[in-house]
Image (tube, rainbow, N blue to C red; front, side, top):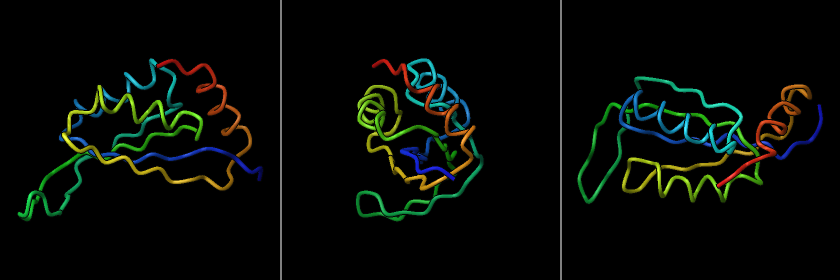
Length: 111
């Protein structure tokens, strides 16, 4: 399998409607090739000194490292959370045809 600069970016939002709006906006800007929405999920964390227990929607964004800075900037504008999760996981290898498709879909990224 070929080496790649692909990334899987993880984020969470409150519900499927927010997730869909975020994914569609990032697709429109060609910053991602695909967004996968997984709901519902339960998140447990500390926020402002208190334990939080929330039902959230996990979003997996498939992109490449060249788009990450633009995704971060887009999150400032589009993400509904005050402090959005943005965790980028490198993809060390994968299906060559899929990775070619991913690269093609994000090669014309606009911000």
